[in-house]
Length: 118
Figure 1 (cartoon, helix red, strand yellow):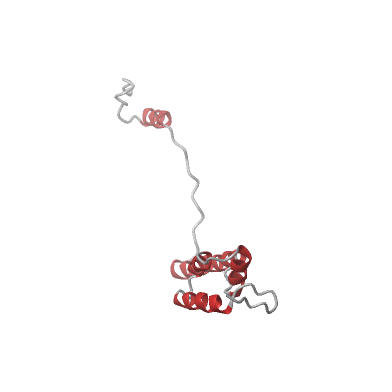
Figure 2 (cartoon, rainbow, N blue to C red):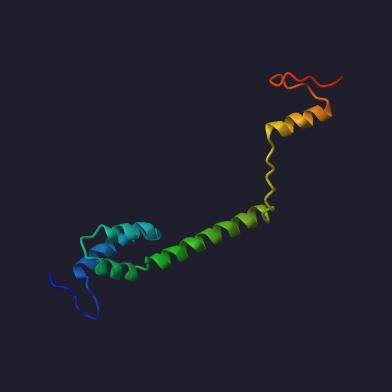
């Protein structure tokens, strides 16, 4: 197979057309495009060239995912309003609960055998 050596091209026109045809089927799904490119029997430099041609390099994928996440958060804020600050979680132990029950005069803890003063 004759390779196209215009510029730094390492991918033959036939392979480029075949990959482009497959990529068109999954337009809008960058991870699927990466998978198609990775499945080709090409050296790593040729695969990197295809990734750059179809704009699915790692940096571009991260940028696209970040933009998608920001868009999802924006739509959520528009729909439900601004997010509320997270509540502080309080760690309560069994001993804390038993002490609170003793102070409140609640029922005794049957496991401890202790009964509250009446």
